[in-house]
Length: 285
Ligand SMILES: NC(=O)c1ccc[n+]([C@@H]2O[C@H](COP(=O)([O-])OP(=O)(O)OC[C@H]3O[C@@H](n4cnc5c(N)ncnc54)[C@H](OP(=O)(O)O)[C@@H]3O)[C@@H](O)[C@H]2O)c1
Image (cartoon, helix red, strand yellow):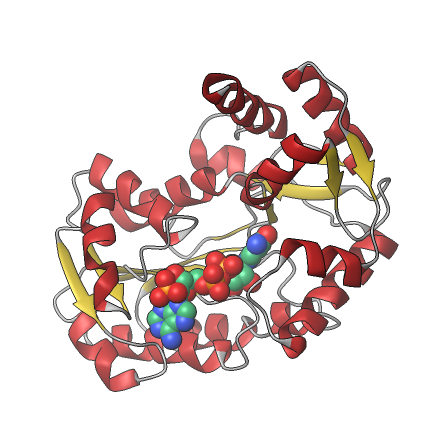
């Protein structure tokens, strides 16, 4: 189990606990130990994906590993391969890799950076499950305070572009199923919620759920990046800009079939995600 990010890896922890698994969290900053324990990890190990030797302790004696790599890191590939190799050496039985939708989209370097990690898994004897999630709905949650404040939902691509999205809680549930049951072993799945929605459609859902008008903004990438103040350097921002250029031309295709099948229920919808955000806003007000 890797870094207990409350946004993503952190969602997997409660799903594992619900299935009676014991969770060991890998953190790189000891200050995060308490956060990991609060999420439900009963063991916490300090290590760093950039220091392969430190990963040996993290994986020693575990039955399964969940790995998600840091976004746009120049050495994301090396970090992922190091984790796969450490798990393989330690005799870990199961490995779940949270990759990205369309990893073979060679025009997007942050997508192809995952391919060698998947390739490394094929040359181990572990039972792997590879997840190719669509755009995370949690990106909308990050923008929510400014949406409520300004009445505008902005993304730097046309408001008519339709994107496949997924609630990461569903991805986390699939990861936990894969780690605790046999039925998803050796599967490569593409977690996507039902439907692909444009920002025009999304603001209409937001307006209905909030009971007031939200409009769709269409800033340039530079304007948007300055406003969102992402923790990225110029190189990382360039990679993200390429992703948005791609969305502008082609949107993002995705199909909910494999997620529905893996969960055995309907995936969480974008409408229900927005409803939850609106309810939280109403409760605070
Ligand atoms: N956002 C989307 O819509 C989307 C969609 C599909 C796929 N993805 C993929 O999802 C992945 C995660 O994205 P993200 O935005 O969550 O990434 P992130 O915030 O950059 O990193 C996630 C975690 O990695 C940890 N980390 C960073 N460097 C580390 C190191 N050297 N050793 C150990 N842990 C380290 C961080 O731990 P700390 O807490 O210590 O900082 C953090 O918890 C990316 O690979 C991205 O391509 C994202």
